[in-house]
Amino acid sequence: MFTGIIETRGSIKSIERDGEAARVAIHCPNLDLSDVGLGDSIAVSGPCLTVVALHDEAFEVDVSVETLERTKLGNLGAGSTVNLEKALTLSDRLGGHLVTGHVDGLGHMIATEAAGEYQRFTIEIEQALKKYVATKGSISIDGVSLTVNSVSDNRFDLMLIPHTLEITTLGELGPGDPVNIEVDLVARYIERLHGAAE
Image (cartoon, rainbow, N blue to C red; front, side, top):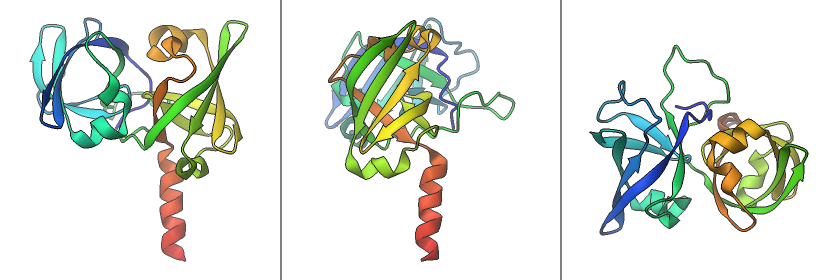
């Protein structure tokens, strides 16, 4: 479980394909790995991945074919920048919202617009996900916990503050770029409970 509050950015050192899956090495000089062990989870631009090797200022993860196909990780290469967050502990502050690291699908940046020091993003998602997105609700974009400003059919707007643009990869995005989408966990469970009651 994660909060969607990104700790730092890292960069992909290498991707070694093994059939349809891949071993990915991530350089992360600003991420404290002293409390990370093999088998621990780290969210890499959204998807929750398991640490399979640790190095000085780097770690490795295995990425399944499912994750490569359902997320933008399959399109990244050596040198690509990624958002990093270690798994939540019970003593941590929940500064964002509960994020599972299970990506629901891909969205695409439609437009960006400066609003003073802020940046307004318009994201388009697949029709199947739009029912989970609500004005003032939470959503995770590339692992970042954000608040939805407005919704119109399968598009929604976000307003990003300078701090978020600076410390995450979101400031690098432009129109047409894909983004990993994780809808609000609560919305998914409400739908499940509603369906079970019918």
